[in-house]
Length: 397
Image (spheres, rainbow, N blue to C red):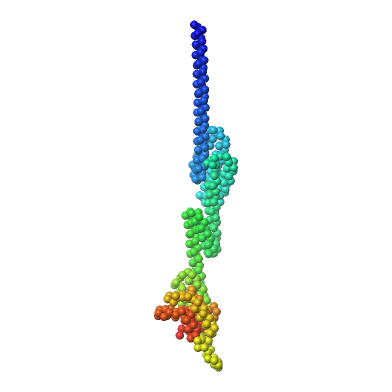
Protein backbone atom coordinates (compact mmCIF):
# COMPACT_ATOMS: atom_id res chain seq x y z
CA UNK A 1 0.00 0.00 0.00
CA UNK A 2 2.78 2.36 0.93
CA UNK A 3 4.61 1.60 -2.33
CA UNK A 4 1.52 2.49 -4.33
CA UNK A 5 1.20 5.80 -2.52
CA UNK A 6 4.83 6.57 -3.20
CA UNK A 7 4.37 5.94 -6.90
CA UNK A 8 1.36 8.26 -6.97
CA UNK A 9 3.26 10.99 -5.18
CA UNK A 10 6.18 10.64 -7.55
CA UNK A 11 3.88 10.81 -10.56
CA UNK A 12 2.15 13.96 -9.20
CA UNK A 13 5.50 15.62 -8.61
CA UNK A 14 6.55 14.95 -12.20
CA UNK A 15 3.28 16.36 -13.45
CA UNK A 16 3.72 19.46 -11.28
CA UNK A 17 7.27 19.97 -12.54
CA UNK A 18 6.11 19.65 -16.13
CA UNK A 19 3.30 22.14 -15.54
CA UNK A 20 5.64 24.58 -13.84
CA UNK A 21 8.19 24.24 -16.64
CA UNK A 22 5.49 24.76 -19.21
CA UNK A 23 4.25 27.85 -17.37
CA UNK A 24 7.78 29.17 -17.11
CA UNK A 25 8.38 28.60 -20.82
CA UNK A 26 5.12 30.33 -21.68
CA UNK A 27 6.01 33.19 -19.34
CA UNK A 28 9.46 33.56 -20.89
CA UNK A 29 8.02 33.49 -24.39
CA UNK A 30 5.31 35.97 -23.41
CA UNK A 31 7.90 38.23 -21.79
CA UNK A 32 10.11 38.04 -24.84
CA UNK A 33 7.20 38.85 -27.09
CA UNK A 34 6.23 41.77 -24.87
CA UNK A 35 9.83 43.03 -24.89
CA UNK A 36 10.09 42.72 -28.64
CA UNK A 37 6.77 44.56 -29.02
CA UNK A 38 7.98 47.26 -26.65
CA UNK A 39 11.24 47.67 -28.57
CA UNK A 40 9.35 47.77 -31.84
CA UNK A 41 7.03 50.42 -30.48
CA UNK A 42 9.96 52.51 -29.25
CA UNK A 43 11.71 52.21 -32.60
CA UNK A 44 8.56 53.13 -34.51
CA UNK A 45 8.13 56.11 -32.21
CA UNK A 46 11.77 57.10 -32.72
CA UNK A 47 11.49 56.90 -36.51
CA UNK A 48 8.24 58.86 -36.41
CA UNK A 49 9.88 61.67 -34.41
CA UNK A 50 12.86 61.48 -36.75
CA UNK A 51 10.68 61.91 -39.86
CA UNK A 52 8.63 64.68 -38.21
CA UNK A 53 11.82 66.57 -37.39
CA UNK A 54 12.82 66.46 -41.06
CA UNK A 55 9.33 67.59 -42.13
CA UNK A 56 9.24 70.54 -39.70
CA UNK A 57 12.77 71.54 -40.69
CA UNK A 58 11.89 71.73 -44.39
CA UNK A 59 8.83 73.83 -43.52
CA UNK A 60 10.97 76.24 -41.54
CA UNK A 61 9.39 75.27 -38.19
CA UNK A 62 12.68 75.00 -36.35
CA UNK A 63 11.22 74.87 -32.82
CA UNK A 64 9.04 71.90 -33.71
CA UNK A 65 11.90 70.29 -35.63
CA UNK A 66 14.20 70.59 -32.61
CA UNK A 67 11.53 69.16 -30.28
CA UNK A 68 10.97 66.09 -32.46
CA UNK A 69 14.69 65.60 -33.09
CA UNK A 70 15.44 65.61 -29.33
CA UNK A 71 12.59 63.14 -28.70
CA UNK A 72 14.05 60.87 -31.39
CA UNK A 73 17.49 61.22 -29.81
CA UNK A 74 16.19 60.18 -26.36
CA UNK A 75 14.56 57.09 -27.86
CA UNK A 76 17.70 56.21 -29.83
CA UNK A 77 19.71 56.37 -26.61
CA UNK A 78 17.18 54.15 -24.82
CA UNK A 79 17.35 51.72 -27.70
CA UNK A 80 21.15 51.96 -27.68
CA UNK A 81 20.97 52.66 -31.42
CA UNK A 82 24.21 54.62 -31.86
CA UNK A 83 23.71 55.07 -35.62
CA UNK A 84 20.30 56.67 -35.19
CA UNK A 85 21.55 58.74 -32.27
CA UNK A 86 24.43 60.15 -34.34
CA UNK A 87 22.15 60.90 -37.26
CA UNK A 88 19.62 62.76 -35.12
CA UNK A 89 22.42 64.64 -33.34
CA UNK A 90 23.68 65.84 -36.71
CA UNK A 91 20.20 67.05 -37.61
CA UNK A 92 19.96 68.97 -34.34
CA UNK A 93 23.30 70.66 -35.07
CA UNK A 94 22.16 71.71 -38.58
CA UNK A 95 18.91 73.10 -37.15
CA UNK A 96 20.87 75.13 -34.59
CA UNK A 97 23.09 76.58 -37.34
CA UNK A 98 20.03 77.48 -39.42
CA UNK A 99 18.35 79.08 -36.41
CA UNK A 100 21.45 81.22 -35.81
CA UNK A 101 21.47 82.21 -39.48
CA UNK A 102 17.79 83.14 -39.27
CA UNK A 103 18.42 85.36 -36.25
CA UNK A 104 21.21 87.14 -38.14
CA UNK A 105 18.98 87.47 -41.21
CA UNK A 106 16.18 89.01 -39.13
CA UNK A 107 18.69 91.46 -37.64
CA UNK A 108 19.71 92.54 -41.14
CA UNK A 109 23.21 91.03 -41.04
CA UNK A 110 22.74 89.22 -44.34
CA UNK A 111 26.40 88.38 -44.97
CA UNK A 112 26.78 86.68 -41.57
CA UNK A 113 23.48 84.86 -42.16
CA UNK A 114 24.72 83.67 -45.54
CA UNK A 115 27.89 82.29 -43.94
CA UNK A 116 25.78 80.26 -41.49
CA UNK A 117 23.50 78.95 -44.25
CA UNK A 118 26.49 77.88 -46.36
CA UNK A 119 27.94 76.13 -43.32
CA UNK A 120 24.63 74.32 -42.74
CA UNK A 121 24.43 73.32 -46.43
CA UNK A 122 27.92 71.82 -46.39
CA UNK A 123 27.23 69.96 -43.16
CA UNK A 124 23.87 68.70 -44.43
CA UNK A 125 25.52 67.43 -47.62
CA UNK A 126 28.05 65.48 -45.56
CA UNK A 127 25.26 63.98 -43.47
CA UNK A 128 23.43 62.80 -46.59
CA UNK A 129 26.57 61.05 -47.79
CA UNK A 130 27.02 59.32 -44.43
CA UNK A 131 23.35 58.29 -44.18
CA UNK A 132 22.78 57.42 -47.80
CA UNK A 133 21.04 54.17 -46.81
CA UNK A 134 18.24 55.83 -44.84
CA UNK A 135 14.70 56.19 -46.10
CA UNK A 136 14.01 59.46 -47.93
CA UNK A 137 11.75 60.76 -45.15
CA UNK A 138 14.64 60.41 -42.68
CA UNK A 139 17.29 62.06 -44.86
CA UNK A 140 18.07 65.72 -44.26
CA UNK A 141 17.11 67.63 -47.42
CA UNK A 142 19.27 70.59 -48.45
CA UNK A 143 16.59 72.13 -50.70
CA UNK A 144 15.27 74.24 -47.85
CA UNK A 145 18.77 75.44 -47.03
CA UNK A 146 19.45 76.27 -50.69
CA UNK A 147 16.30 78.41 -50.79
CA UNK A 148 17.53 80.28 -47.72
CA UNK A 149 20.90 80.81 -49.39
CA UNK A 150 19.31 82.10 -52.61
CA UNK A 151 17.01 84.47 -50.72
CA UNK A 152 19.88 85.84 -48.63
CA UNK A 153 22.11 86.34 -51.68
CA UNK A 154 19.28 88.28 -53.35
CA UNK A 155 18.94 90.55 -50.32
CA UNK A 156 22.69 91.15 -50.36
CA UNK A 157 22.54 92.03 -54.08
CA UNK A 158 19.61 94.39 -53.45
CA UNK A 159 21.34 96.35 -50.71
CA UNK A 160 24.55 96.55 -52.74
CA UNK A 161 22.54 98.19 -55.52
CA UNK A 162 21.02 100.61 -52.99
CA UNK A 163 24.51 101.51 -51.74
CA UNK A 164 25.68 102.14 -55.32
CA UNK A 165 22.65 104.30 -56.07
CA UNK A 166 23.19 106.36 -52.91
CA UNK A 167 26.86 106.87 -53.81
CA UNK A 168 25.95 108.19 -57.27
CA UNK A 169 23.25 110.38 -55.73
CA UNK A 170 25.80 111.91 -53.35
CA UNK A 171 27.97 112.65 -56.40
CA UNK A 172 24.96 114.38 -58.02
CA UNK A 173 24.88 111.76 -60.79
CA UNK A 174 21.13 111.44 -60.52
CA UNK A 175 20.48 109.77 -63.88
CA UNK A 176 22.87 106.94 -63.03
CA UNK A 177 21.42 106.65 -59.53
CA UNK A 178 17.90 106.46 -60.99
CA UNK A 179 18.84 103.61 -63.35
CA UNK A 180 20.38 101.67 -60.44
CA UNK A 181 17.26 102.22 -58.31
CA UNK A 182 15.20 100.86 -61.22
CA UNK A 183 17.40 97.75 -61.28
CA UNK A 184 17.01 97.44 -57.51
CA UNK A 185 13.23 97.59 -57.92
CA UNK A 186 13.35 94.55 -60.23
CA UNK A 187 15.32 92.64 -57.58
CA UNK A 188 12.91 93.80 -54.86
CA UNK A 189 9.95 92.66 -56.95
CA UNK A 190 11.53 89.22 -57.27
CA UNK A 191 11.85 89.09 -53.48
CA UNK A 192 8.21 90.13 -53.15
CA UNK A 193 8.80 91.93 -49.85
CA UNK A 194 6.97 95.21 -49.31
CA UNK A 195 9.80 96.82 -47.34
CA UNK A 196 12.47 96.46 -50.03
CA UNK A 197 10.02 97.43 -52.78
CA UNK A 198 9.26 100.60 -50.83
CA UNK A 199 12.98 101.39 -50.47
CA UNK A 200 13.55 101.09 -54.24
CA UNK A 201 10.42 103.05 -55.19
CA UNK A 202 11.23 105.82 -52.71
CA UNK A 203 14.75 106.11 -54.14
CA UNK A 204 13.40 106.29 -57.69
CA UNK A 205 10.95 109.05 -56.78
CA UNK A 206 13.66 111.04 -55.00
CA UNK A 207 16.07 110.74 -57.94
CA UNK A 208 13.35 111.73 -60.39
CA UNK A 209 12.58 114.82 -58.32
CA UNK A 210 16.28 115.70 -58.11
CA UNK A 211 16.63 115.33 -61.88
CA UNK A 212 13.65 117.61 -62.46
CA UNK A 213 15.04 120.16 -60.02
CA UNK A 214 18.49 120.07 -61.65
CA UNK A 215 16.96 120.49 -65.12
CA UNK A 216 14.80 123.37 -63.93
CA UNK A 217 17.79 125.09 -62.32
CA UNK A 218 19.82 124.65 -65.52
CA UNK A 219 17.00 126.09 -67.61
CA UNK A 220 16.65 129.07 -65.27
CA UNK A 221 20.41 129.62 -65.47
CA UNK A 222 20.37 129.57 -69.28
CA UNK A 223 17.37 131.87 -69.35
CA UNK A 224 19.15 134.32 -67.03
CA UNK A 225 22.25 134.24 -69.22
CA UNK A 226 20.05 134.97 -72.22
CA UNK A 227 18.62 138.00 -70.48
CA UNK A 228 22.12 139.21 -69.62
CA UNK A 229 23.15 138.87 -73.28
CA UNK A 230 20.04 140.78 -74.35
CA UNK A 231 20.77 143.59 -71.89
CA UNK A 232 24.27 143.75 -73.38
CA UNK A 233 22.68 143.99 -76.89
CA UNK A 234 24.26 140.66 -77.83
CA UNK A 235 21.02 139.44 -79.36
CA UNK A 236 22.38 136.46 -81.33
CA UNK A 237 24.00 135.04 -78.19
CA UNK A 238 20.83 135.75 -76.24
CA UNK A 239 18.78 133.77 -78.76
CA UNK A 240 21.12 130.78 -78.36
CA UNK A 241 20.78 130.83 -74.57
CA UNK A 242 17.00 131.22 -74.79
CA UNK A 243 16.70 128.28 -77.18
CA UNK A 244 18.84 126.09 -74.88
CA UNK A 245 16.57 127.00 -71.96
CA UNK A 246 13.49 126.40 -74.13
CA UNK A 247 14.55 122.83 -74.95
CA UNK A 248 14.68 122.01 -71.24
CA UNK A 249 11.34 123.72 -70.52
CA UNK A 250 9.75 121.69 -73.32
CA UNK A 251 11.18 118.47 -71.84
CA UNK A 252 9.77 119.51 -68.45
CA UNK A 253 6.43 120.37 -70.08
CA UNK A 254 6.61 123.75 -68.31
CA UNK A 255 4.02 125.66 -70.34
CA UNK A 256 4.40 128.95 -68.50
CA UNK A 257 8.15 129.16 -69.07
CA UNK A 258 7.77 127.90 -72.64
CA UNK A 259 5.53 130.87 -73.41
CA UNK A 260 7.83 133.29 -71.58
CA UNK A 261 10.97 131.99 -73.32
CA UNK A 262 9.35 132.09 -76.77
CA UNK A 263 8.41 135.70 -76.08
CA UNK A 264 12.02 136.47 -75.16
CA UNK A 265 13.20 134.79 -78.36
CA UNK A 266 10.81 136.83 -80.50
CA UNK A 267 11.89 140.02 -78.74
CA UNK A 268 15.58 139.21 -79.24
CA UNK A 269 14.95 138.49 -82.93
CA UNK A 270 13.19 141.83 -83.37
CA UNK A 271 16.05 143.59 -81.64
CA UNK A 272 18.54 141.75 -83.85
CA UNK A 273 16.56 142.77 -86.93
CA UNK A 274 16.47 146.41 -85.85
CA UNK A 275 20.20 146.32 -85.16
CA UNK A 276 20.82 144.88 -88.63
CA UNK A 277 18.71 147.64 -90.22
CA UNK A 278 20.56 150.32 -88.24
CA UNK A 279 23.87 148.96 -89.50
CA UNK A 280 22.80 149.09 -93.16
CA UNK A 281 24.69 151.75 -95.23
CA UNK A 282 22.80 155.01 -95.74
CA UNK A 283 23.63 155.22 -99.47
CA UNK A 284 21.98 152.85 -101.87
CA UNK A 285 24.25 150.38 -103.60
CA UNK A 286 25.09 151.15 -107.21
CA UNK A 287 22.57 149.89 -109.70
CA UNK A 288 23.66 147.10 -111.96
CA UNK A 289 22.78 146.85 -115.60
CA UNK A 290 19.79 144.59 -116.06
CA UNK A 291 20.52 141.19 -117.54
CA UNK A 292 19.85 140.59 -121.18
CA UNK A 293 17.07 138.18 -120.38
CA UNK A 294 14.21 138.89 -118.04
CA UNK A 295 14.60 137.27 -114.60
CA UNK A 296 12.08 134.57 -113.79
CA UNK A 297 9.03 136.18 -112.23
CA UNK A 298 8.75 133.24 -109.84
CA UNK A 299 11.72 134.32 -107.71
CA UNK A 300 11.78 138.13 -107.09
CA UNK A 301 12.60 140.56 -104.28
CA UNK A 302 14.77 139.15 -101.45
CA UNK A 303 18.14 138.82 -103.14
CA UNK A 304 19.42 136.68 -100.28
CA UNK A 305 17.18 133.84 -101.42
CA UNK A 306 18.35 132.06 -104.53
CA UNK A 307 15.98 130.12 -106.83
CA UNK A 308 17.76 126.79 -106.38
CA UNK A 309 17.48 127.02 -102.59
CA UNK A 310 13.86 128.12 -102.78
CA UNK A 311 13.07 125.14 -104.99
CA UNK A 312 14.97 122.83 -102.65
CA UNK A 313 13.09 124.15 -99.64
CA UNK A 314 9.77 123.75 -101.44
CA UNK A 315 10.50 120.14 -102.36
CA UNK A 316 11.66 119.35 -98.81
CA UNK A 317 8.65 121.02 -97.19
CA UNK A 318 6.15 119.22 -99.41
CA UNK A 319 7.35 115.95 -97.87
CA UNK A 320 6.37 117.09 -94.35
CA UNK A 321 2.92 115.90 -93.36
CA UNK A 322 0.44 118.11 -91.49
CA UNK A 323 -3.30 117.69 -91.12
CA UNK A 324 -4.00 121.34 -92.16
CA UNK A 325 -6.61 121.40 -89.40
CA UNK A 326 -4.72 121.69 -86.11
CA UNK A 327 -2.92 125.01 -85.42
CA UNK A 328 0.78 124.78 -84.47
CA UNK A 329 1.54 125.97 -80.93
CA UNK A 330 5.24 125.14 -80.67
CA UNK A 331 7.81 125.74 -83.40
CA UNK A 332 10.32 123.52 -81.57
CA UNK A 333 8.37 120.30 -82.03
CA UNK A 334 7.84 118.07 -85.04
CA UNK A 335 6.78 118.60 -87.73
CA UNK A 336 7.03 122.40 -87.46
CA UNK A 337 10.71 122.35 -86.52
CA UNK A 338 11.50 120.47 -89.77
CA UNK A 339 10.10 123.08 -92.16
CA UNK A 340 12.85 125.01 -93.93
CA UNK A 341 12.77 128.67 -94.95
CA UNK A 342 15.80 130.60 -96.23
CA UNK A 343 19.25 129.54 -97.26
CA UNK A 344 21.46 129.76 -94.15
CA UNK A 345 22.09 126.15 -93.10
CA UNK A 346 21.21 125.49 -89.48
CA UNK A 347 19.23 128.73 -89.20
CA UNK A 348 16.59 127.94 -91.79
CA UNK A 349 14.44 125.45 -89.89
CA UNK A 350 11.23 125.95 -87.98
CA UNK A 351 12.86 125.64 -84.55
CA UNK A 352 14.79 128.85 -85.31
CA UNK A 353 12.80 131.05 -87.72
CA UNK A 354 9.39 129.40 -87.94
CA UNK A 355 7.29 131.90 -85.95
CA UNK A 356 6.36 133.98 -89.03
CA UNK A 357 5.13 131.28 -91.38
CA UNK A 358 3.49 129.45 -88.43
CA UNK A 359 1.47 132.60 -87.64
CA UNK A 360 0.29 132.73 -91.26
CA UNK A 361 -0.42 128.99 -91.25
CA UNK A 362 -2.56 129.23 -88.10
CA UNK A 363 -4.37 132.33 -89.37
CA UNK A 364 -5.31 130.59 -92.63
CA UNK A 365 -6.67 127.62 -90.69
CA UNK A 366 -8.80 129.92 -88.54
CA UNK A 367 -10.03 131.71 -91.68
CA UNK A 368 -11.05 128.40 -93.21
CA UNK A 369 -8.49 128.51 -96.03
CA UNK A 370 -5.63 126.27 -94.86
CA UNK A 371 -2.45 126.12 -96.92
CA UNK A 372 0.47 123.72 -96.72
CA UNK A 373 3.59 125.26 -95.12
CA UNK A 374 5.49 124.59 -98.37
CA UNK A 375 3.21 127.08 -100.18
CA UNK A 376 3.37 129.64 -97.37
CA UNK A 377 7.17 129.50 -97.15
CA UNK A 378 7.57 129.76 -100.91
CA UNK A 379 5.32 132.79 -100.91
CA UNK A 380 7.50 134.55 -98.32
CA UNK A 381 10.69 133.52 -100.11
CA UNK A 382 9.51 134.73 -103.53
CA UNK A 383 7.77 137.93 -102.41
CA UNK A 384 10.51 139.53 -100.33
CA UNK A 385 8.92 138.33 -97.14
CA UNK A 386 12.12 136.95 -95.57
CA UNK A 387 14.76 138.97 -93.75
CA UNK A 388 18.46 138.29 -94.35
CA UNK A 389 17.71 135.09 -96.18
CA UNK A 390 15.35 133.93 -93.46
CA UNK A 391 17.99 134.18 -90.70
CA UNK A 392 15.82 136.82 -89.03
CA UNK A 393 12.58 135.13 -90.01
CA UNK A 394 9.85 136.92 -91.93
CA UNK A 395 9.31 140.59 -92.49
CA UNK A 396 6.62 141.84 -90.07
CA UNK A 397 5.45 144.41 -92.66
